[in-house]
Amino acid sequence: MYINQTTNSAITLAFSGHETFPLRQMWIKKVVDMADVNCLIKKAKFNSAEFIAELGVGKNMLASMKHWAQACQIIEEHDASSFALTELAKKIFLHTGHDPYSEQATSTWLLHWNMARKSDRATTCYWLFNRINSGVFSKSELLQQLSSLCAEANKVVSRSSLTRDIDTIVRSYTPKSELTAIEDNADPVFGELGLINHLTTDHYSFNRGPKSSLNLPLFLYIVLDYWRASYTSDSTLSLDAIAYGEASPGRILKLDEDSIIAYLIEADDLTSGRIRWSDLAGIKQLSKQNFDVESVMIEMLRKAYE
Image (cartoon, rainbow, N blue to C red; front, side, top):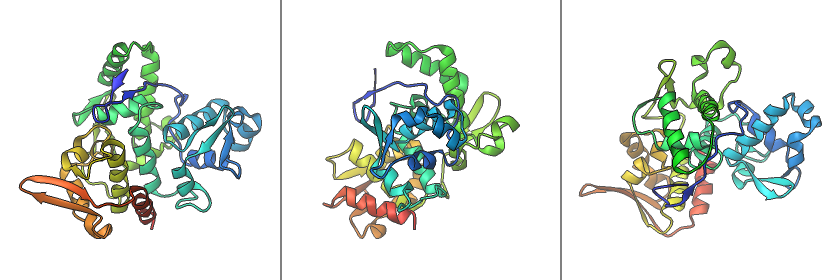
């Protein structure tokens, strides 16, 4: 067992499920489209020869689609025989949603945020974005760290399984232009975010700084999501927490302090004073008035797609 330093909660370890396929364009949308009118998906569909033929994918690929949909919090357990679409999935990907054709970068940022902030389906992704503090990393050092993590948690995971998981996660974030001709066909969704650069065979770097495709309403939605999860009862949230806290926007979105401040100084206007940025006597923080966080998040999500 490992502990999240911010929430003091146990971190579940998981290093498989993707069948070594990075998340591909339209996979999430295809999973959403499998749902019935009640927004439920029978688990048997993910082993159905009919759906394998209909989607034009192999059995392992269909299993991978299910994995990524769970890891990105698009589907969740409903009962022993079915999954349910999450509320966020309904708001975004249904035909009445903000992005019914899964075309916008805003959706990709949200998928990344959902996956990298929780470890129960994608521990390597969680570790990569939350526990690697240097700007440059290697797959070999990541393997060593995750091996140590498993040993500390008394979890038996083979070195080959960890290696495959690391390769898959890193490829998922490698820009398409930097993949080999064979890997290029994978068309990894998260590569478009520009979070990771490929340096050498084993070495990569994080692209920390401004993100042009990350708009202000989306950033505030993510900040509020982090705020309610990690600092539920607090009326203020420090810049340090936003930038450096575990599973924080700064870490997961790879933003530097200047980029974060550039967003936060506009929070007052966008939220009509419900969220305010202050920098007094060296104390840099957000403060929030009494309001329903969920309703403001819904508002920010809508504006993020306008």
